[in-house]
Length: 178
Image 1 (cartoon, rainbow, N blue to C red):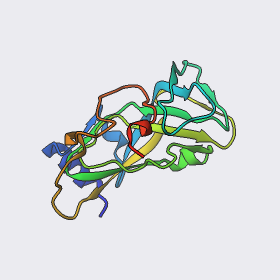
Image 2: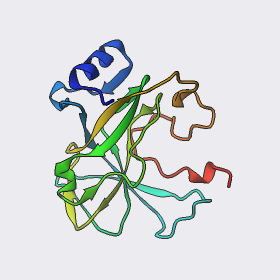
Image 3: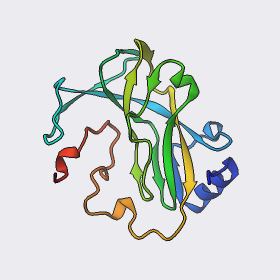
């Protein structure tokens, strides 16, 4: 079951959902709008290796915007830091973003209960498009969890994305054993 606007506000009041900064006007009927930070990154190499630590180059979106190009994976990050302690957060693109041909995540739209961080975005575009820091980029949707949670993400020893950050984070696939 997806949380409604009133229920999201109740959970924020209880402290089970934290959104910083929180702006009431960003709360939709059953979602919360998140915004693109000024920080972007691209991988240093065009060929990536799932078993290697692939380096990234960070840069900032200038005031005049930045034109994203097709065939390049950009890592972005949300302005908003979130914590979700009793619900499953999902990050989806906004329809206005999609209508510009911008995909904000390749596969990682679901967070785990206990995820406490900004959201790294895996951005790709269908055609060149100029983006701006602070623009609405996606929306968070919260789902109720059935059953008791044994281990929250922020308490897992092997959680790879627990370090609080304001910049995009590269893939940590190389930390897996396979």
